[in-house]
Length: 70
Image (cartoon, rainbow, N blue to C red; front, side, top):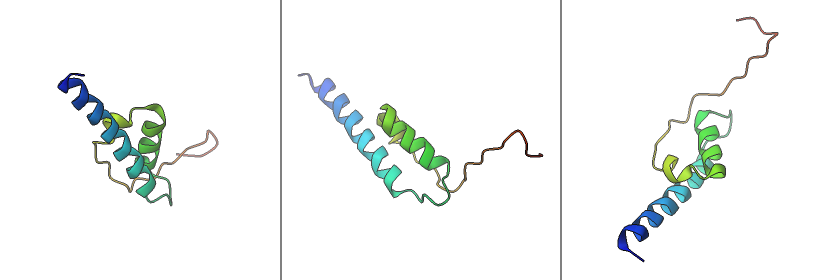
């Protein structure tokens, strides 16, 4: 196996592991954008890239219904 391939595989695996660890360490009360992004990325395989990105944990995710006034 070529050194470049080995480094690429290592980069992907470390990123995915970092993403899972960040998802677990997030403050889940209330659910914020960091939790959503890290969890979604870890489940889809995008954690290989997202794991290397630091996302601030603090913006809660809000869902508006059609009956709510703006």
